[in-house]
Length: 388
Image (cartoon, rainbow, N blue to C red; front, side, top):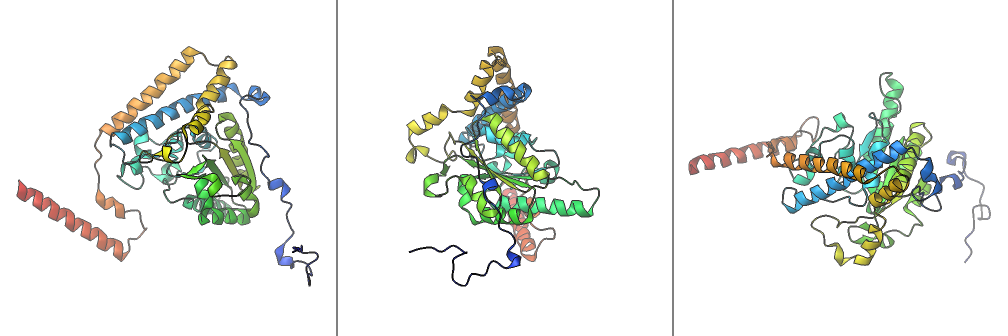
C-alpha cells in the first residue's frame, strides 16, 4: 500500500490560509549525541570558578541525599525519593535561574529546592507527612513539590504565560520571568506533559522543560514506555526545540540549561532539555530496585557518577587537592548536622491548616469538613481530660 503525501492526494488543493506556513523541523531536532564537556577539549574553556562551585554544591547535594535517606530509615521521614546520581541536574537547574524566575519541581527534586534557598526541613515537609508544602511558594518562587506526574509542567506554562501578560499591562512587573519545570522520564508518558508542551509551543511561552531521564519510571524501563529516538525528540511534534545532554556532566548540564533559559527569556520560545542520567538509589526507601535491575547495570553507572567525574576533572586540571576535598567534606558534614538538628525539633502542627490554601474562599464542603475536624479534636481532647 502506498501512502500518498499531500501533493499527490486526490482532490488536494493546498492547506487553507488558517493553517499557516509549514515549519522546517530541522532547527528543532535535538543534538545527535548528548552534549558533554568533561573529558573533552571544552572542559578547558569552562570558567574555573564555576567548576569549583559546581563541585562544592555536588558534594553538599550528595550529603543531603545521604542524610535524608538516613532520616527515612529512622522513621523521621515517611518516605524519601533520593536523587543520588542525579545531583548535577538538580544543582544546575537551581543555578541557572534568576531570583525572579520560577522553579516547578517534582517529588524527587528536593535538592533543587534546597539549592534555591529553602531550608532542608521545609523542603522535606511533604515527605514528613506534616503538610502539603513546608515553604511559601511566592517567597521562594518555587511551586510546591508535585507528586502527580507532569502536572507541574502545565502549571509552569500557565505561570510563564501569565507573567508575560502581566508585564505587558503592568510597568512594575518583571518582564522576563522564565519558568523551569523538572520532569522525570515517566512523566513524558503523561497527557499533562504533552498538553504543556503543546500550549508552550502555541503560546511561545518562556518556559524550559528539564526531563531527567534516569532510565526507569519506578520499575518500568524507558524502552517499555517510549519508542521515541530520544525523549528530546518529543519536543519537535509541539514545535519546540529539543536538546540532549549528558546529565552526569555537571558543566554540560549547566551550559545547556543556561542557554535554554536565556533562549526562552529572550522571547525565542520554549525549550525541552533531556538530561540522560541514572538513579543510583531505589525509587524510594520503600522500593526494592534489585527486582528490576541488575547490580552490573548499577555498577556501570556508578563509574559515571557525576561527583566522581567532576572531581577527576578538577584534580587533573590542578584545581583540587586532598585539602580542598577535605574542606568541602567538612562543609557537607555541617549541612548534615544542621539537618539532624532541624529534624530533632518536634513541629507544632495545626491540622486545620489543611483547609487554608485550597481555595481563596473556602467552599461549603471545606467548611463542613473543617467543622468536622474541630468537633473530632474537641471530643478527643475531652476523652484525654477524662482519662486524667
